[in-house]
Amino acid sequence: MFPSELLSFLRTAERVAVLTGAGVSAESGVPTFRDAQTGLWASYDPAQLATPDAFRRNPALVWDWYAYRRALIAAARPNPAHYALAEMEALFPDFSLITQNIDALHRAAGSRAIIELHGNIRRVKCAECGKTASAWDDSREKPPRCEHCGGLLRPDVVWFGESLPPDALQRAMEAAERAQVFFSIGTSAVVEPAASLPRMARRKGALLVEINPEATPITPLADYALRGKAGEILPALLEAMTRRQSLRK
Ligand code: NAD
Ligand code: ZN
Image 1 (cartoon, rainbow, N blue to C red):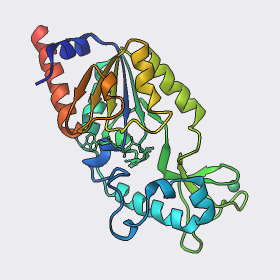
Image 2: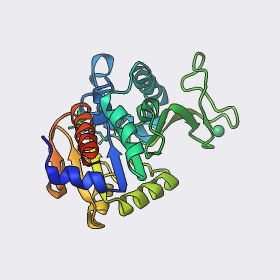
Image 3: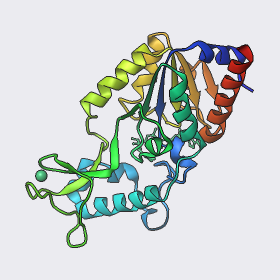
């Protein structure tokens, strides 16, 4: 099922970096932005809700939308793609898992070397002073206010048009630059600067592997474009890699 050159390259690789996007959590029931809007939220465009402008115009609406997404995420469990990535961390001496997801499902599956590029929906931060918190009370006021400065609380996630946490971005770029194999999984590869990471890795000589049911702007650069669901392909790839490894011993 997998090309033997890919398997033998993976068998000997020491430095591996992975970029994941919303597609990796789709099989856990956390919809991608494209598939997100159902029911009450059907008429809203996420690209118009996940922005600083939207929050300035209507903070209560944005707060409610995130409360809805947070509830979806709270009910979600890691899927076989998350578990396969957690197992891969143990196979390679230098392994970095760079994620654009804000759902913390990689951590729930056991991954530890995680670089969160877009924050985490389980935290909030003050829109004024930036202090973060992981507990809050929105029963009286939505959004609730910061206990330090009285500013409005917002989810601690990166919105469209905002910059990424510099430390996480730096570590992600370093991981991409030293990787021998770079996986781009379940991401549409259009949101910058995350979308530049596969390109950067490829330029530095990494083998680029994409896992996605659909083509993306980085497909033409990929050495291997594995078409299908991450939750099916990743466990099969892991199995094929380790089966060959034990045969070799
Ligand atoms: P995206 O929604 O732009 O793209 C999702 C990609 O996943 C698409 O290319 C799609 O073809 C692919 N996909 C769908 N099902 C898949 C599956 N089963 N296996 C593999 N791939 C699959 O997502 P993005 O590239 O992550 O960028 C959107 C932004 O939205 C990010 O900034 C992210 O922070 C945010 N977001 C996060 C979550 C989450 O935390 N789970 C969910 C939605 C959006
Ligand atoms: Zn504050």
